[in-house]
Length: 115
Ligand code: FES
Image 1 (tube, rainbow, N blue to C red):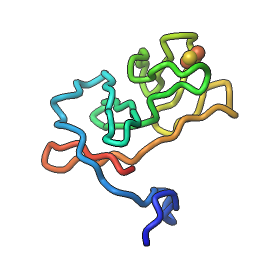
Image 2 (image 1 turned 90 degrees about the vertical axis):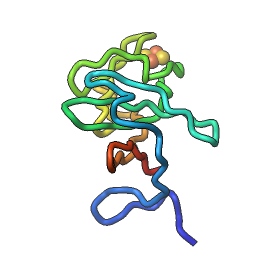
Image 3 (image 1 turned 30 degrees about the vertical axis):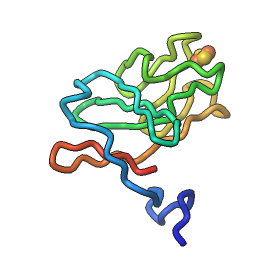
């Protein structure tokens, strides 16, 4: 049986690709909330022609990170200003507080996230 939490040798995770929308649904420089069937929420961003996905839950007090302000590859949490690198989930200036990242694949204009 396949594990959903193991990593491949190149650092990517194994898991199911879930189609979440069309590329035109997320304009460049914007974020969007993705609600999975499990009830979990992810934040999806479109920056520099690439898509990035992280957990939509700030580790400080739980604010939705999809609503944060994007500045390059950093998103600033709306509630208290913590900043996260959407490429690797690192909290800028607070290395012990990271958010989970997810691989995003675009196929024929469809955005798919590996979960
Ligand atoms: S809830 Fe995000 S910085 Fe406080």
